[in-house]
Length: 359
Image (cartoon, rainbow, N blue to C red; front, side):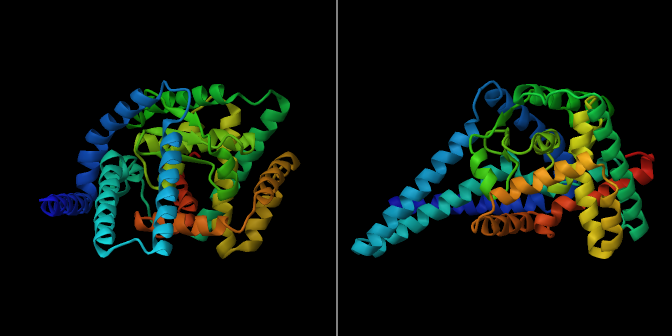
C-alpha cells in the first residue's frame, strides 16, 4: 500500500512538472495568462502576508532549509561509514528526494518562476530589440557617462546624508508609484522589502540582493556601499513585479529609478548601467571603453574604488564556485549568457533610446 502511494505521488509530481514545461513553452500564453493575470495576484497575496513583518521570513526559511540539508547530509555520511544503509532505505530516500525536488520545482514555478518564459518588458514597451552596432554602443556609453557625472555633481553641490534602510525602501516604493502612472503594469503595492540577515554571507558570495519566490519578499544586502543600494533595491522589486530575467529586472529597475525625484537614485542607476555598457564595449573596443571611463569625475572614480575595495576585501576561494553555480541556474532559465545576462540591459537601453530619444 505504501509503495503504491509513493508511486502515485511520483506520478502526480512528474505530470505537474511536464504540464509546467508545456505551459511555459509558449511565451505568448505565459505573458497573456500567467504574467498578466495570475502572478500579480500571487505577488500581492504574498507581499500582504510578509510585508508587515520586521524581519525577512524568507531568510529564516532558507536558513532552516540549509540547516536541514546539512543535518541530512551529515546523517547520510555517518550511515554510509557505519554501513547501516540497506537497499530498501536507499530506495526510500531516493523516492523521497525525487518527490521533494519535484515539489520545490512545482511551487517555485507556480509562485513565480514561470515568469522566466514571458514576452517581457520589451514586448510591453514595443521596443525594437535588434542587434546594435558599435556606434550605438559608443553613443549609449557617452550618454551614461554624462548622466553619471551630472548626477554626482548635483549630489556634491547639495550634500546630504544617505537615507536609512527604512527611508530608502520607502523611496523605492515611491519611485514605483510614479512609474506606475506611465506604465500601469509596473504597479507595486503593497511593498515587502527587507534587509537580508544573510548580508554578511552575501559579502563573501557576491550577492547584493535577492528575491524569494516562496515568500514574495525582496532582500537587500545592506552591507554594500551606500551608493549601490537604490538601484539594487529597484532591481529586486522588479523581480517582485514579475520580471524574472536579470537584464529585464535591470531595465525595469531603470524605469523606476529614473522616475524618482531623488538624485541619489539617478546616480546609483546610471553608475551601475554605465559599468554594464562599458563592459560590453570593452569586448569590442577596449580603447574607447577606457576613454569613456576616463571622463568620470574624480568623486565618481573614488566611489568605484570603494566598490572595488569592498569586493576585494571579501574575495575568497568559494565565491567562483558560487558564481559558477548561479550562472548555471541563469542558463537553465532562458539566460544563456549566464552572469553576463545582467550586462544585456544595454540592448534594452539602446532600443529605448532609439524609440523615445532619452535615457
